[in-house]
Length: 255
Image 1 (tube, rainbow, N blue to C red):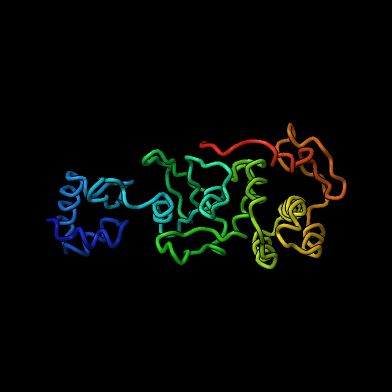
Image 2 (image 1 turned 90 degrees about the horizontal axis):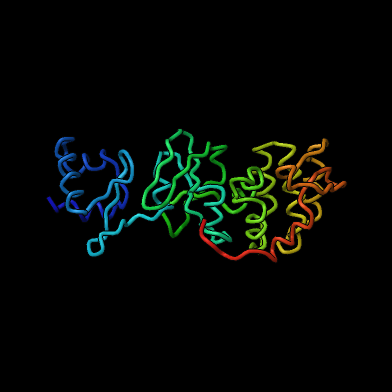
């Protein structure tokens, strides 16, 4: 029964159908899974999703990003979790944001909570060259997503810390993703926040002006009105006072 271990290790993550392809029969596949699970060679992550374990330590081979990318056929790492994957998270969260075309129930596996987010578009979802089992939003798509849903970025302070670590953003790609969303308030948020990092991110004045022109004309609050109490007339937006002061606060921690 251990003859299939090498093939399963090459897959790393698999479903029942993959086992059936190996054994030729559903009943044989189910028996194999039970046998391997009993011997801690295979671990069930959720219904119909399995991973092999390290033969010595019995630890799950697949990491959280690989698991999140295989919850459904369309799932990918997004929002703050994508910032974390790109090495830009100020804090490490025990929650992993997973966008998907098909809905799934949130679940926990090995101290990580996998949270469903509705996928807005498949544009900008990449398979990194060195991580063939991972699907994650590109840097520019991630930034647009996080500014669209600041609550899913870990909050404004966390997002500001992440932006401060980025050496460059491609403004043509930013415009492309902004056009897909086509939200006037999102243009306003992107322009308002990214102007604070314009020099470091190598963004042109034309891009900031473009966001300003496309932005909503009516007054908006960047975050909850209780914390966004300062009015910025140029952008017609209420936001926290001295946003860059966040960079002087806080340390890395697990949330």
